[in-house]
Length: 324
Image 1 (cartoon, helix red, strand yellow):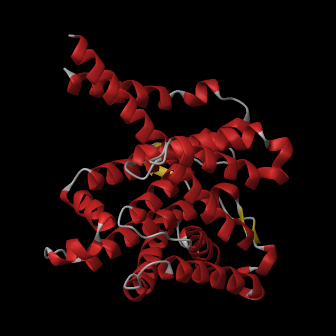
Image 2: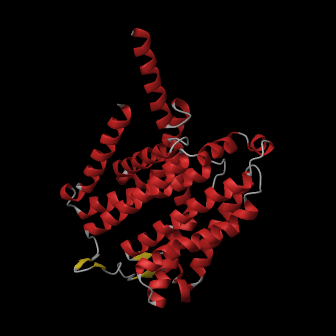
Image 3: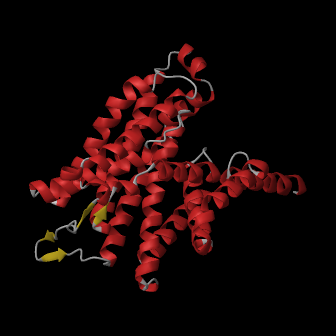
């Protein structure tokens, strides 16, 4: 019965998401919905990396790698967006492999320090490469995705079209499917064991490096795919979009929502998005708001909001069972 009710819930949720453009007519709010979906994919990838016990501050850098790769392929080489999109993910995966293989062997805080340096090096490189990458001014007039043709049926992507929403939705469904399948598989259980005690897992014959590297590459690949979509959706990118602060915000989203499940990352993204909108007039105090939210979560829900919800449901069921 619980399985069927969950299936019905998923169907209803998908149906509601499909009709969102019918109710969200304001371009500003539609943009907010699309960016929320993109941040869910990004935060989910970071949670996957953190499920092995590693904290990456280069997540925004891979977002930027995907954005710049796709932009250059389309604008300089004339490649179709639909080819540039997977190629951007491939480039992100290759870079993640090259960085992750030596760096994931580092213990303690050294890995996140290295990723922080990698992200800053990329930002400085893009900023100083004026001729090729546009420097600090970035690249503008990035073309929208070209038409998709299926027989006599075609989908165009004019700026601010709801087609961007549906394209984002497809990416969101695919990424969430990947995250949840990995999370509930043997891979996810081993990653949790590695996070809890990597040395113990290694002593039991687990190839810890393999699982850490796989999680890092998959999370970075999906971040690069988001970057490709982001570049052609906004039609403008610059190094200022992919900074250490962006990686920190994603980390806050994951920690607030909860590390134990991708659902926690979704909750964290929605909560931070709502907080950002509510405090837009006080944007210069944004970091204070995030810090206060973190303190409250650490004080009342150390495992994140989703973990607090699960504990509440568990106690409620226990209470009902005892009453029965």
